Amino acid sequence: MKFINLLKKEISELINAQMILGLVVSLALFWLMGNVMQSVTTEIAEDAKNTNVYICDMDDSDVTHELIKDMENNGATVNKVTVNGEDYASAFKDNSFKSFVVLPKGFADQLAKGDKPELISVTKLRSASTFSGLTGGTDTAEALINKYVSIEISKQKGVSEEDLKNIESELTVVSHTVVADKSAKVSSGAVLGKITTTNLILPIIIMVLVLMTSQSLIASISNEKIDKTLETLLSAPVSRGSVITAKMLAAAIVALINAGVMMIGFSAYSKGMTGAVTNDLGVSEAVDKALSAGDAMKQLGLNLGFTDYLLVGVQLFITIMICLAISIILGALVNDSKTSQTMLLPIMMMVMIPWFVSMFTDVNSLPMIPRIIVYAIPFTHAFTSIPNLMFGNMTEFWIGMAYQIIVFAVVMFFALRLFKSDKILTMSLNFGQKSRFKKTGKTIED
Image 1 (tube, rainbow, N blue to C red):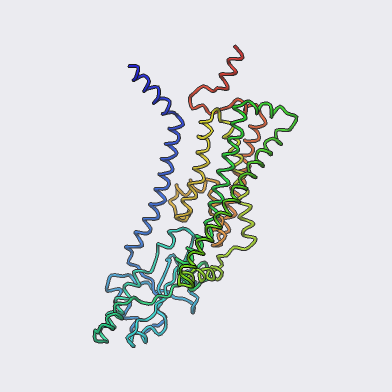
Image 2: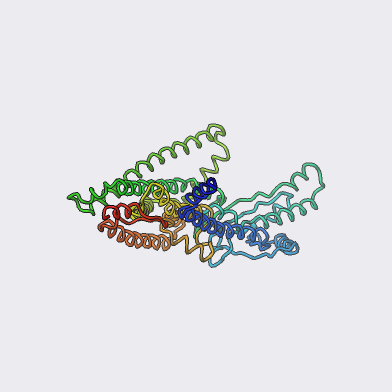
C-alpha cells in the first residue's frame, strides 16, 4: 500500500494542469496543420487526376488541329487559350487556371521534317509557398502531345535504332513563368527555389527575435518576482513606465545581438554551400539556372527595393513589440520556475503555426476556419510580409500591419495597467494550486 500511495503521489505531481494545457495546445496545433496539409494534398490530387488541359495553338495548322482532336479522343478536355503576341501573362487575365502549353509557330513544319518540335510551358506563380509549384502543371498536356508526336514520327520513318531514340525522346519544353502581368523565360521551380533561398533568413530572424525576447523578459520579471526584488525595484524613485521601458529595450537589444550573430553564421553557411557547388561543378547547368533565376526575378518584378525592406523592418519591429508586451503579462503570472517554462509555450505556438503554414502553402488557400485562426495570430503577418511585397499584395500587407498595430495597442494597454498596479506582485497562474505569494501573505497576517 505504501508503494501504491507513493506511485499515486508521483503520478498526481506529473499529471497536472500544465501538462494537460500542453496536450490541448499540441492537439490544436496538429489539427490545424492537418487541415493545412489536407488542403494542399487535396489540391495536388485533384490536379493529378484532372483531365483538363489548356493549349494556345499559335501554329494554327491542320497538324495542330489534328493533335488537339487526338487529345480529346484520349479523354482529355482541351481548353483553348489566347494570348496577345508573346505576352503570355495576358492569358491569365480573368481566368483561374494556373498553366498552359503553347504550340509555337512552325510546330507542324518541324514535325514534317521528322524532328520533335519545341513546346512552351507557361506557369503562373501566385505565392511563394513550397507547394505552389507542385499544382496546376502541364504534365498531362505534355505527355499527350509527346505521344502524338512519337506516333507521327514513327509513321514517317523506318524504325532504325537512331530513329527509335528520336521517337522515344522527350519533347523540348521551354518553360515560362508569369507573375501578375509579367513573364520570364524560366521554370517556375527555378524561381521558387530562388525565392525560398532569398526568404529563408527572415523566418530564422523572426524565430530568434521572438523567442529570445519573450524568454529573457519572462525570466527577468518572474525571477525578480520570485526573489522579491521586484518590490524593491518598483518602490525605487523611478517611474514604473521607465522600469517597463528599460526591461523591454534590454530584451530587444539582447535579441538583436543573437539574431545578428545567427544572420552572420547563416550567411557564412550559405556562402560555403554555394562555393562548394561552384568548385565541384564549375560553370555548370545548375549554376547557370540559378543565375538565370536571379535575372528572371528582376524581370518578373520579384526583387525587393529599399522601401520594401524598410516596410519589412517596420513590421518586424511591431512584431517584436507585440511579443514584449505579451511577455510582460505572462511573466507577471509566473510563481515558480516550472511555470516560467510553461508560459513560453503560447508564444512558441504563435510562432510555429504561421511559420509552418507559410512555408508549405498560401494562407489564403486554407479553408475558412483555419485561415481565420492563422490570420488571427499577429506573428503571421511578419512571415507573409516579404511574399506579399514580392507578389504585389499590398492590400494584405497594409491590413496585416494595421491589425498588428491594433493588437500591440491592446496588449500594451493591459501590460502597462498591470505593471502600474500592485497586482503584478501578487497575481499568478496557479492551475488549481495555492499560490506561494498568497501563502506568504496569509502567514504574515496570522
